[in-house]
Length: 264
Ligand SMILES: [Zn+2]
Image (tube, rainbow, N blue to C red; front, side, top):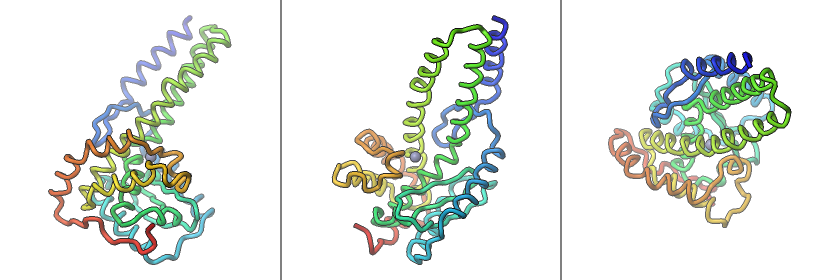
């Protein structure tokens, strides 16, 4: 039993000292990793991606991403980030922002964006994941899960309990957690794009395309980790009045921005 008591104490201490409030959403989150550590991981991953993919030479895509990325990064409030925005040459429809501010958009995603404001929807959503430190939070929960499992072992719990504990934490914590992060990234991203001067209605038009069922699997890679659906659109619609207020306050408005010629 002492093992269980010690691990409970460790957990309580960790939970007390390792909480942080997510910007914009004001949610309290558990973080056992430092921002510096996460940013270093981000930088390492960035150089790996650059080795794996060629940079796109498409002038339209590169210029659009620079405009969108620069506008959003200005309102992101991350002076310690070393922002960079690159288009990777790939048929995959994908995008990411690594901790530390390295943003990549795969050229394949541009066939699904009608204008810059729709591109801003994707970029601001990805930047929101980084600002909210969702990667660090995920790592923290998985560390906690390991500590919990060790506690059970040292307390002499049988393997059946460990299996149950594993299943419980996977389903009870990890699964709804991703949905929570998706919603939070949508909400923060919508506010960011509006503050950056892109009309927030573009977030609805973008997601509606992929929730109607008319484009099954066309944007597979991104949307498989970013499920569409009525719930997502409802959330974005509910936040429109607040986002429009932010948009009205913005001094430099782009509206929907440049329309992409290849848009479908
Ligand atoms: Zn996401």
